[in-house]
Image (cartoon, rainbow, N blue to C red; front, side):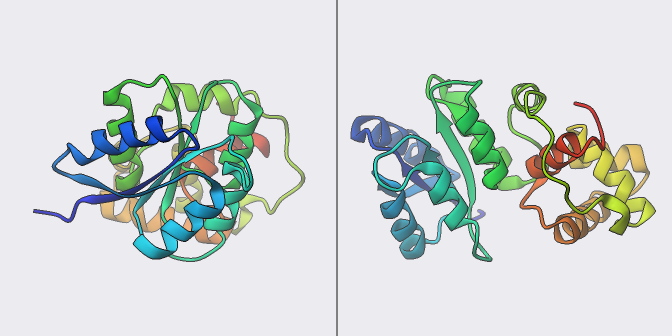
Length: 214
């Protein structure tokens, strides 16, 4: 059996954090390795427990979730971050995605949505809650000028555009007539060349640089 997905839950409401932790621990394929009540404690928990996923509340005293996410993802080999918010259309969610978060969940999400998001983000081959993510990204304004995608090879550019439209690795493989392993290789090269954290950042980059509409 594969190793369980290791999760750290960060929220300044202990009852909410413990509830999510219990939900995670009830699953065969994941475990909550720590909880934390603010951003600084989250950084310490990640350093100690090396989780795969961090569920990160955004609005916390002290070091908030956006700044904690940015600090956390500044290092190599860091976990993926799923941010927790009370609102779907919240400017702090946009800022968290720009900081490198892989997905977001509202605090009224169902049990199935929480578990599905953790598994999807951990697998890294799709975008969790694609429709809502694309809707949120569409509200963003243009970014400051960044490196364009001319550094990508023709095949990488093709894959980039498919990722930017929200396709999964399997869907990209079918559309581009390549294997999923090849898709993963191209995506890794795209992220490296454009200095992006993951496929959600590809969507954000593409929209904010007018490469593709979402």
